[in-house]
Amino acid sequence: MTAQPDTCLHSGHRRRGVSVLLAGLALLVALALPAAGADYRTAGYMYLSPLPAAEYCSPQTALVLVRFQNIPPSAVTNLAQFIQVTGATTGIHAGQTKVASDGRTVIFTMSTAFSPYERVTVALNPLVAPGTVGVIGPYQYQFMISGPMSGGITQLPPNGTITARGDNPPNEAKERAFDGYVGTKWLDFSVPNGTANFSWIQYVYPTNDSRIIVQYSITSANDVPARDPKDWHFYGVDGLGNLTLLDTRTNQTFPNRFQTLSFGVNNTNAYRGYRLEITGVLDPTTAGAVQLAELQFFEPNPNPVITARGDNPPNETKDKAFDNNTATKWLDFSVPNGTANFSWIQYVYAGIEAHLVNQYSITSANDFPDRDPQDWHLYGVSGSGNLSLLDTQTNQIFSSRFRRGFILTTTTALIGATVWKYPGLVIPARPLPFNCPN
Ligand SMILES: [Ca+2]
Ligand SMILES: [Ca+2]
Image (cartoon, rainbow, N blue to C red; front, side, top):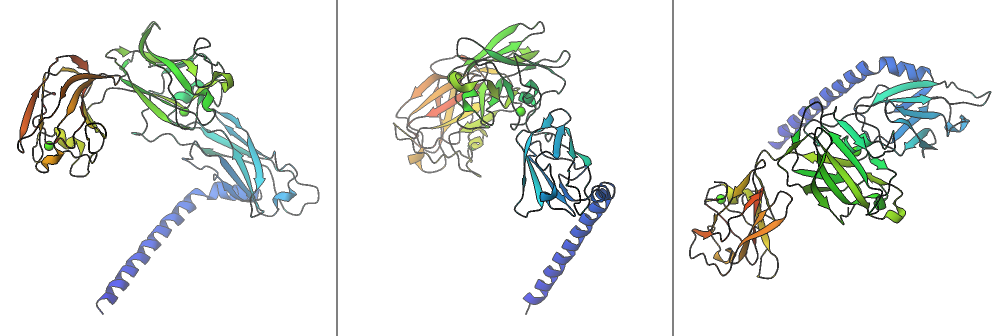
């Protein structure tokens, strides 16, 4: 009996909620539609998508839908040509026209993406045979493409200078490599084959701006893997246009379309700009061009970055190994047995700091001595991600649940970070203190 009033109460709340929501929608429709709505309906259209004056359409918007009020699509004599879609910066978007299974909706499918913040014009010019019953007239309207959310993908200043060896404007122009969208790409018809036809693309910051870049990423395009960059150089560009080689990669492969691969750079200089020079594509014999969807630059991390092979959230996470608190621990479910299942945890310093490390300690955890690290390597890691072996320990026994220190045998200054690897151990835990950042 006591449940009954509760049910009614909830039900009443729900109804009130729905009616508030509907009132909100009705208000929006009433505000948005009168001008445009009366407009296209007067011309004989029942439904358009995107709606006239629509905002925030995706750059990947691929469909325009048209439904007539009084005539069937079969009455239109130029069905394949009557829809024309033009982006203010991307130009005319070719497309295929077909009639949906309802027999009334015309679907125009486009294969290329729009640019962020672009205004798109849709022109409808249907022709009908003489004597057709029903009204249809030409109609033109516009909608807007949205831009990236702030705080999303790293965006370069929009007024930098972008240059390239070549490109394929408007839809595959050089600017597409820096627009924050993997759905758009830069394409150059040069085919780098390892020894010739090198292609390049470059971004220079506006005015006198210069930045320290310690990592960059390349995202593969939508199609033709043969065109993927395979070998390249990454350069810093100074104010006179001189190039400084910062990084070289060879035999890189992108496992998927729209795949982003990141590469660290040993760099402590602020350059006016950066250039990617592609010296080889995946398959020069069939590529016909080189292409990529995105090229992104990353400045130094404002905070340390801790990574690990695995951990056990929420309470036994990787950051617990560096929190200077012996009551917390890092746990990874991998079980290193001396030859396999190695686990690792890594600490990368903030900024571009290089630290000279000459001592470290590992503190055993609160329980399960079987999980204590027994054999391990300590590595330094360079800004480009290369590991340098600094120390190896074997058959270490933590005699109780307490801290144990280890003295490094080498003292090498390494940029960026320190890596710990633990072949043959289960769980190191509770390091206190972690000496390296001192
Ligand atoms: Ca892009
Ligand atoms: Ca801890």
